[in-house]
Length: 278
Image (cartoon, rainbow, N blue to C red; front, side, top):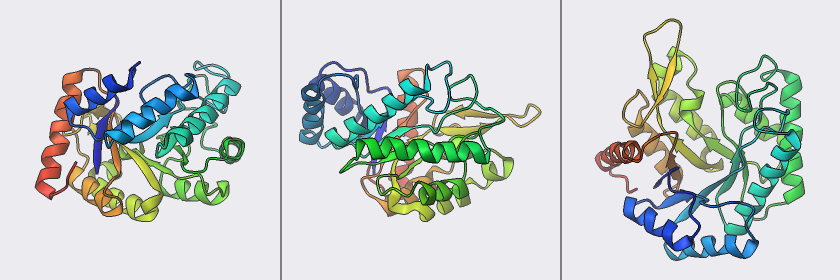
C-alpha cells in the first residue's frame, strides 16, 4: 500500500514536488499542478513520478455537473471533469475523481432532490458523457461517495457500476463519507470489509481521515485526523492490502501540516503493527 496526503500539491516544478513527497516518506500523491498547463508540462510530472516510483493516485475534477451552483456552471464542471480524466489518462494516474453533484446551490451540499430516481438517471447520463467523450485507455473515472448524493452506500455504488455500464468507470473509496448512522459508526469494521470485498480491484484510490461522533443532539459526525475517531484502521489497511499492495491512501481535509504529520504517524503505527508496508 502507498500512503500520501492532499497537502503535497500546488507545485510549479516536478522536482520540488518529488522532494516534498520524499521528505514526508510518501509513495503516492494527487496530481500536483494546474490541469490547464500544456501537455508537455503535464508529462514532465508523470516522468518525474515514474522515475521516483511515485504512484499518481488521482486527478481531481471537483465540480457540480448537475446544476449551476456556488462552484460555477454545470457546463464548466463537466468540462473540468473531462479535463481531469484526460490528464489522468495522459499521465498514467490511477483515476480521475469528482462527485456526482448536487441539485442545490451548494456544489457539494445536501438537497432534497439529490437522492431521487430522477437525479440517479442524471448521474448515470453524466458519467457516461464524461467517459464517452474522453475515451480513456489506461485510467478510470470515479465518483467519491458522499453522505447525501450518489453513491452513498454499497447498494448505490453497485447500481451505478451496473447502469453506467462502462469499463472505464471504477470505484473511489472514502469510508468516512459513508458513515451516516450510529450503526455504521460503531460497526464500521464490518462495513469496511463488506465494501472492499464487494468491489475489490475496482477500487482505484482511497481517502484517509476519521469519524468522530459528538454527544450533542441530534446525530452529529465530525471529521477528524486519522487516529482521532472510530474508524478501524487496522481493518481498513488489511483489507486494502489484500486487494492491492499498491493501493493509494491519501490523507485529506486537514488544515495544518502538523495535523497531516500526526495523521500519517498514526496510520504508519497501525500499518507496522499489522505488518503492512506503506
